[in-house]
Length: 100
Image (cartoon, rainbow, N blue to C red; front, side, top):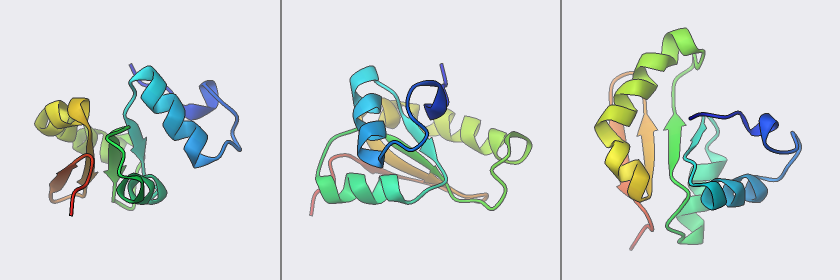
């Protein structure tokens, strides 16, 4: 099940609040924003998983297929804890927590 953050919390909520909600409810964050990936990398946490969409057009008609393909390819990793970045041409997965 997918939800929009604005259906769960304040529109002006800090990213940390959104991340805590995702962890508490077992959600994967899907975003075009690089902040969540950077926060996960810096925190050393094992979650929440983040699916970053790195395309110009993120509307469902353009990005929907990319997202569905990424979920099919990396669903197990997202369930365990991962940062998945997708572009038009490829997907990249990094398991959480990041280790040096």
